Picture: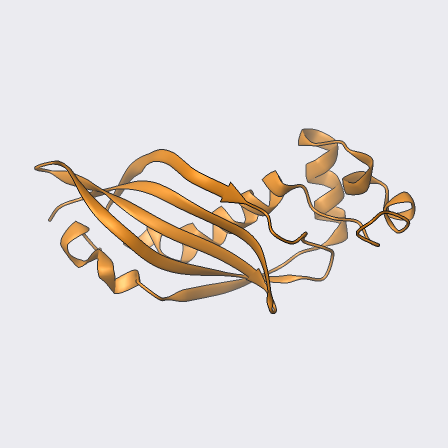
Length: 143
């Protein structure tokens, strides 16, 4: 079943998935896109303020996006996005974390007669800690 704009509140307050974060993946992503030592060197990172290797915030965003697509967007009549109104990484992701994404509909803006913009709150958690918080501006088709 495809969820169109008029039924988008179906996703309000829903949670989805788990994604197991591996050390090798953190290093591989960082070496290609964000090669700072606290993302690439486990020994040095152990002595950092975080006490462990941490995932790049961009990697956290990418893992969150995967969960968001699998849990919500794959079943939604999306047409792309206009961007993010905010993006925060309140706590770092470390190897062994299990990520879950949570959806909150912050509002719907009328854009055109054939689609609207959903202001979609996305929060990713690892256990009790929030590791990503954002508001995505998602284009969603009308039925």
